[in-house]
Length: 172
Image (cartoon, rainbow, N blue to C red; front, side, top):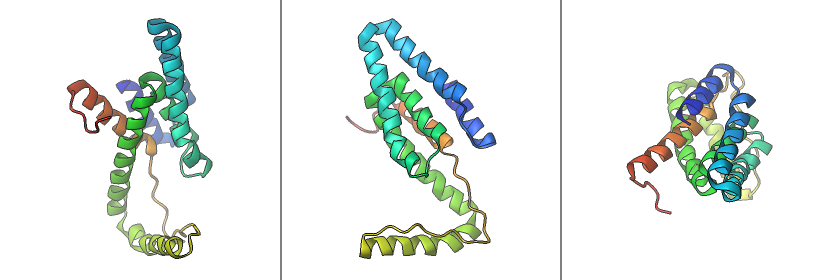
């Protein structure tokens, strides 16, 4: 799993996509492994994880804030780890994604300086009117790209490390 996550993160960073060969290959491997080891129960475990992984990122994908490759990657992780584990992976991924975004804004200070007031206005508008209007990006500054495959890999690594060490960051 570690090698697959590293490859997915590198591909996402370099070509801005997580290839289907990685996601579908991992899905098939996870489904097959669990079926061979535990029969129908194992297959259902894996299918549940696959569905949960895709389901967790389906709404962000449909809203256009996440790519299909990221959604399929989380589904593949779910096929290997199961539904309960993929929920925890998603929580760790969200934290890693937030840290990644803060670092990206710290590195791209010019963009942050111009964009943050716009985001603040969006939040105020939503708070007062309960209507969401998308923040406008500064026209002359290129929008920094957050490669979420990296956050997914980091969140999954943290989950796997907590499982291997027995140190539970979240009791469940």
